[in-house]
Image 1 (cartoon, helix red, strand yellow):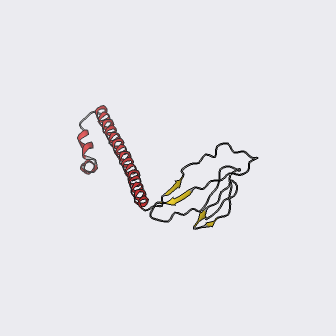
Image 2 (image 1 turned 60 degrees about the horizontal axis):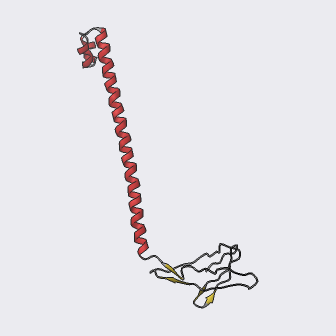
Image 3 (image 1 turned 45 degrees about the horizontal axis):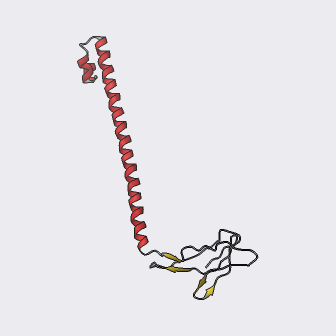
Length: 145
């Protein structure tokens, strides 16, 4: 008997003097306490995971904003003069109308225009760089320059 009592959990030895009903009640309480502890641990893990994810998102946003602002200091900056132009009513019978607009890079690095398209089939344009005119392009054509 002594060997059996030594192998038992010390809490179980303390319960031997209680009635069966009392032991069941205490074991049930212990089980509920253990389940509650496990629930609390799961909640803590979820909260920690959310904090880690939120911290990661914040870090990505901060890095994005930092590198975005860092890159914008030296970025090309195009200025168009005039910024807009209204041809008014255009008569088909009177023929084509035209205007010139100046594009100027006011940034530090090179301004690269690699694709140009118009938004209307009735419009065509060309780009003149250092006195050299690009091919004419329209809505369905694109020009590279």
